[in-house]
View 1: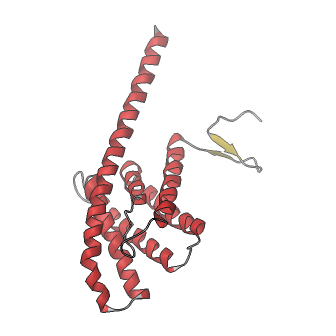
View 2: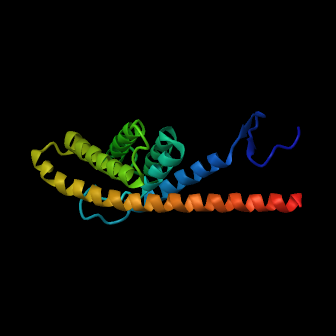
View 3: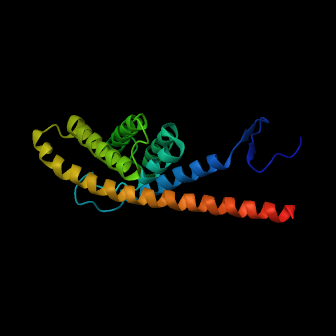
Amino acid sequence: MSDQPNNAADTKSGITIKTTPKDHLIAWLAALAIAIHIIESVLPSPLPGVKPGLANVITIAVFILYGWRTAVWVSMLRVLVGSILIGTFLSPTFMLSFSGAIASLVVLWLASHLPGEGLGPIGLCLIAAMAHMFGQFYTAYLLFIPHDGLFKLLPLLMTAAVIFGIISGIIVRSMLQHLEKRKNNTTASTTTQRNEQEE
């Protein structure tokens, strides 16, 4: 059997699974989102359910770069694998995290069908954070705390979601600018090398 390129993985059955730099980047981003999810789970919180949501930064970046379907994979991997690693799978914490992720993915799907250029990083992070918080809140109300007094916390929770959503949007915008700059530098370097070889 001839040697396969470095970006291919052979199984024992002889099936070759080819990967691309895009696949590697998505896998790396998913792993980063899982790591952030685990770190956030041990951070102290002033109110139940109030977290910075920095793992969602990765989801929004993937959504902008690769589309909604890929963002779904990254988000679901983050929630499922993260919960398994920290031992909260199928617990109330998992249910809240899962419902929040589903709610944010739904609004991102709606945002992807907006006419024109759509929303920017800050706008996407803002609506995703608000949907995530509302999804968690409504799940808590339906499954765990079915008391009308819980709604007194909703304005405070949504305000926190707006603040963290704007902060996340600024981070996503900076990340995308860095990736674009790096891509341009790589392209320029490759072009220079080709010109030198032709000379």
